[in-house]
Length: 414
Image (tube, rainbow, N blue to C red):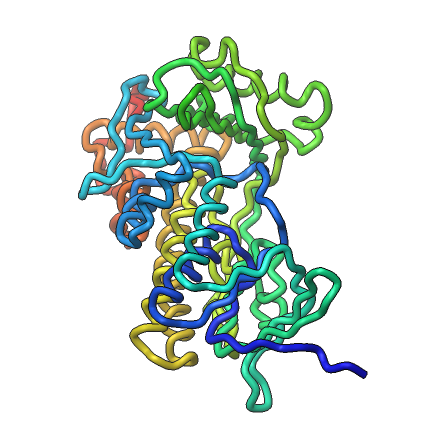
């Protein structure tokens, strides 16, 4: 029987998307020998995030990846309009603004940058098996490419293999899920009207739905709708796009934005669940990006978290100089910042999208507080994991700290 050929690296990354490629770039820059295994030969358009929060744009700058995103056609989107109808400037305290882009183009450019940084990119290749560290042997990844099986051995395997992560299953790390009643649907739009530096984030009255339009230049935009009672089937077939557009109009997206809109990519719906893994490291296997947890897609923090995961893991690798302490250091930090983001997302989703009269009153009270002092509403876009999630901050968000807000009259929308 022929032996399966093998190769040795410091790090093997399974998955060449945003989280995996960024981790590969940073680890290769730090001097590690890195292999990235990517299943697809070409990244294609699917329904996914194409809006990067200001704090995520700050990560791009911090990581020295600005030129990579520019090559991918990244587009600055500093202004946003919500129910108040007043455009508002969105930025970090340092001035970083949101970015929009073609997700596949960014993936391609990041993977190319990983190769330029010294990583070995193996593509297309299928990951057949992942093995943790055991019996004195380091972790490994078994792949198949061009009809040949090969074993990649490493000190660290980075699982960047998405929601259905094989690395997570092999590590025995349980995925916890917070179920949502909302359906998310997304599609690439063409011939979008209105200013291309202005996004729309419009919630229907009484939390009955939400539409987001994120221009990315040249008349293109990524559109999303969230509906509490829709199903995946509503967005399928010849009537799916009409259903999507009806929902967008019902949210109050201006007609000059939608009048000539065309469908330019696949349309699909998904339940807007969020999930997480406690301490995403075990026995030489570290999880990043969606493999470690999927944040509530309503708030668009997933790609920013993926970049932060990559940086945190690389910094732990550099600081510790050994796999075990580096892996645990990363996992502890990841738990903290993901918990912060997820907590604030849940505060906002529960308040803004819960149905019923009691929920209406909670929204009314909170909105009066926000209109008097906008800092009551957490700046998740600008500050991300640096937010305060104490009980006092939660009460302030809801307006429970001020008795004068509890008996509101007419609503004042933030």
